[in-house]
Amino acid sequence: MKKNILMIFLLTLLLSLLTACSAVIKAVDVILEEEPESKEETFMEDKQPSSKVPSAEFSAPDLFSTTLFKEDPALLQFSKKIEKRIAEFDPNFKILYRGKLDWDTFEVQLNDINNLVSFVNPYTAGYIGNFTWEAWEVDNGYMVEFYFTYFTDAETEKKVDAYVQEFANLYITNDMDDFSRAKIVNDYVVQLATYSAEGASYGQSVYELISEETGVCQAYALLAYRLFLAAGLDAKYVYGYSDNQLHAWNLVSVGSNWYHIDTTWNDVDPAEPYTITYAYFLVNDEKLSEDHIWANENYFAATSNAYEFMHDMWYADTDDNVIYYNSMTDSMVYAYDLATKQNTQITETSCYYLATFDDAIYCSDYDNAGFLTKIFINDGSEEVLLEEEVLNLFIDDEGVLFYETIDGEEHLQIL
Image (cartoon, rainbow, N blue to C red; front, side, top):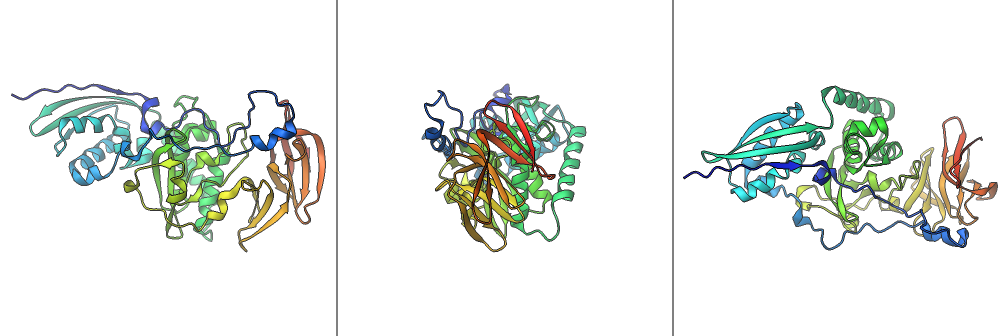
């Protein structure tokens, strides 16, 4: 006798694999629990990258593997049909599955629809808010009825498409090499976004990221994915674990090699909106596996270490094809010339929140109580501009320096 199966599953946003990342992400720990006895003594202890190594409870076998698609092509076709209906924002539809999976295994996949769809089209999978499903036996298979809600709609996605095209028109030129295209996308997303799980989509949607400039790793990685493609680069959306949570990032093809780029972790801290690190820019598998876990069989191998020199850079600013940065190794300031590939030490000063303008670096001097300091690039000489701790320096195109003092007040100075 045929056994009827009724299964109802509610997939909530916060438990989805694509809703990776908790609301607490920190690349650096800058907020002290107690007022220090001496700020000078604690600056360097505070300004250190924190570990994101997942604990032993997280492992790659827990993640969806595309080997299942190879073993059961019917599951891939089932997933493609679902993706097509999601792309049309269909709220209710039925899909027939006739494949090799037994009920228990198939049920697991139904509960993991986001990730099935993400391997067909990761951007479409990002539309999904909540869903429920019902399934029942039919001849040699199962009929599944889905009920979806979405974070976005067709009109909203037209706005996203226009935004992506405008980015390409403004920032991508025919003479740019792959590295330059990848870097401009990384820098753009990092400087645009502030990490937050608040908002109508809980920070998950690309539209929320570009309109509110807030989001979580799914939004970071999906926007970067769209921009990489618009910039003419092959790219993939990757999900796995990092920092003891589900997480998302990208794989990008640069100069015929694949590399990982994690724009979420390159965005140092939500409280530091202008800060960029390159610790997770064009990283190979070996390096990334130190604090990320993913199902390797699902993605291209990233084996090149051609851009290893970038991974020591944080609190970085780029001017005229030169990256000025604070070294994570020795906390000194260097200039890396992208044209000549020469790295030059500018000063031994620990210089954070740095911004460059007119042959000078402006920063918070952590060797001198965080005072606002001007460092001349040609000889490394210094001039203290304000004997007060400053944060979040930024210089606009007109040469106006913006910064915050420790009391939270915002200031500007025409250079």
